[in-house]
Image 1: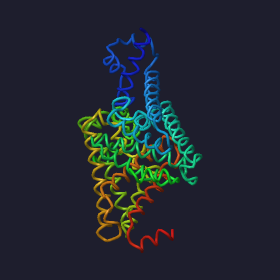
Image 2: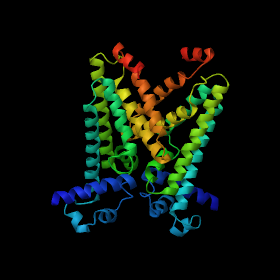
Image 3: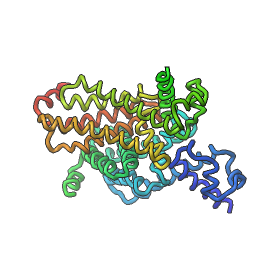
Image 4: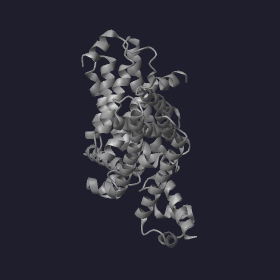
Length: 205
Length: 205
């Protein structure tokens, strides 16, 4: 029963913090959303920061799970990168917590105002960056991608482009920026493709 | 004297709102930063919203001025787009208000929590998008860019990529994401170049 209540607090807070930011979400908002009294929340968390950290970790784990699931079906490295683009795109219509991508929302919200939350956003971005880099490195090792492909740069480019697109799509309530970002990143990824077989697959699309 | 005080309130608030977000900046913060009493601020503004709107407009005008100034020196359309990239990059080391780009910060901060501020961010993004689109269209008319260049897409791509890069650079305290974004966008811009003369200039760089 305790775990159910704790998870309810975390899921509701993840949504509230993501939509309103750390400073825009009060303990009262969390009490209203969960229908719990202050004491009911303080049974599980000592303060607002502890709730915010748990909410961020909860959202980030949902993000990682979505990437893992999408990549299970992909076989080539190119398919894996395409799947990564689609996971980012899915955050527009179906975010892990209402209000966009919690990683970049937290990065914007917390930088200069909450060092511990900023640190969590930074680590999340760098975990994601390393995750994509590994997929590109695997593609280079298997002879699918050109050896000259700069894994770290391409990985950063994918993240920053998709995250910028998600913000622009969200503020305009328009899917076009996300679609534009994917189109351009696919071209960039295909320019890194080496093998004839994969190029043939591209040509046949 | 009144105008000086009003401008002092606006400039201080632009910085505070940009660093902490709308909800993270209280009237008390503005009083502390300006060394004014509540009455001194209410001489000029009826409420926090009026201050936030004036602060946003102030920052956006500084952004537009920076673009205009940078583009004065550019002659070809390619030079103009390069200058636009450099203006975005300048927001990393030298933002118009401390704390990153006020347009995307406001977009992230206000979407779902403050419709009027969201509307201002949306209009600012679309003004910028139209501004860049016109530069691309001019390049197509002058025969510098390929007629097939999709002005609206390329303009969106420049904005969303540079803004995503600024957030990633800021949270990591690392200029690399901004540099990576510029490198890839220059490649994309150069792929839209038609004239031999301009291509020659690219090759000679």
